[in-house]
Length: 252
Image (cartoon, rainbow, N blue to C red; front, side, top):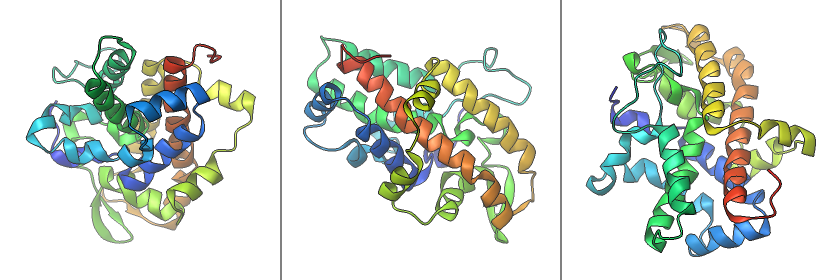
């Protein structure tokens, strides 16, 4: 159930920045004020990738397994044995509990916010719901324009960077265009429902990217809409969770 350190980098910097920026743009005034206070004026984008580095330090090594939730091919979401060290889904729930706890200290809430901003993004990266048996696709060897890669690695960064040569602000501007009804539909369900939704995509990814496949223009074009949709879901859902915490008038 344990994964190597290489599994920690979900979506790469660009993807996490995009998720955080979309979330920031959708905070209600009350939620934005609360987040600003906790993060002492720094943007969620500032902290979007912090956990990838922090998880490799002794102080925060306990968070290494919080970037993913493994579900093997012969298991369902419900019957996959839980990782005793925690996973992305339990980590999101834990941070929300800390942020909602009136007795939590400012430092505890700040750490919880930094973790939450990152892990909600990780939950929407399909290979972070990958199989424990292949370390979330790290052992699935593929090629990317004839260069040796692994399945997890190309989903972390190569596919995102190749789908569109955009900055994170351009990503947000281009994909964050749902109308109110579409956005409300996307926000339905629980944290577990969102993870199950990603897991269903993960199964399709494994079927499509067979070992040895040479990923090129056609494959990038095919999966670009999924990447766009998952980054948008991550951002809007992160805002949804924070709005629900900090704005009593937020319509959930």
